[in-house]
Length: 398
Ligand SMILES: *Cc1c(COP(=O)(O)O)cnc(C)c1O
Image 1 (cartoon, rainbow, N blue to C red):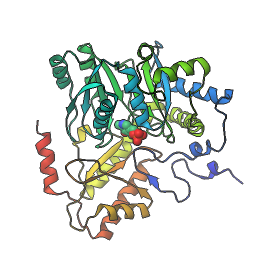
Image 2: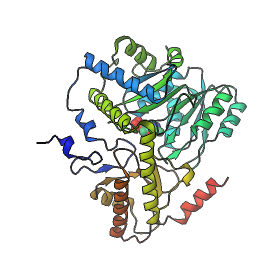
Image 3: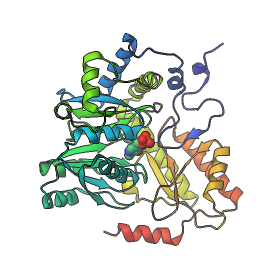
Image 4: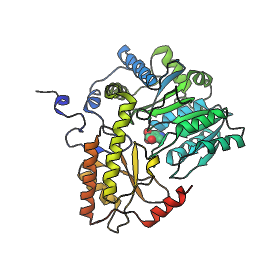
């Protein structure tokens, strides 16, 4: 009998599982799931080698040719790794400028409140990216600001923020940049050779297409060294995790062993696919197929094309009185697709992710399913309420 991996096409989830059109956890390859069918001793040399290997592979992804950076994995979901980065790499007397345009930027500000770190927030609402000239203005006006914290892809709307521009403005003003690249890393280039930053953070279950369980910070070794004694938390102390890993090859506390071995397989596939470039191209093709198809049905995107990321797309709920998101969700699920509710503050919306083991054929099926779901609900057009357009135009008039 053939092994399951020989009989199941690469891009299909296992028998009857729905596709997850969500920004992580997402649909993973069968071989990634299969990699978890074994138990590992966390102190054993085989597992230590796996940890060493994934750290090196992640560093290679930022082109760390001068060996300036190191990669520190951290147990927990992405937010744990963000908090570890903020609590460890921001000195206690630092002052941060948080660039927010959605839920994740605001979560960073909230984390800084918990940590008691001084900060100010440049809040752009849901529709617009923070721009380089605004960063320059804020930094010029406040010499106490030491660090800028940016969200690479703001997953709550799907906006891809102009990170090069932000980095240039930050370093031109002599400040340091920390990047939450959670949902972009692995699909959008973030080479340390072309973009300056102190550290970036991402996690196992986004564009690398692993399963949830840990995040990782890629930081300048100088920043990691300076982080000694900085953290508010033992379990989230990046400096302590780093030095222990360097010394012993081990994670300080129980690592998510199955997640780590699955991640090693996900990285192998990432490399085989063609790395960051190829993964980004597949996601862009997914997004384009999705947006073109959904617009044909009358759906409109929250964002103008220019800021649409290849990661996740927000659509306005249709104005039609028969449209009900919960019914739409269940109909989509019954057709094999799990979609995602919106996370906007002003208008009703939903989101469809483009990341994970998905290709344009899957995205075309998603559009077909959405069309059929509308028919079943008795919605003859997916056009958004006039208020959604007005709100968008008002806020994006420049
Ligand atoms: C997913 C994500 C996080 C982390 O979320 P968790 O639910 O803790 O994994 C943080 N920032 C961004 C931009 C994200 O997309």
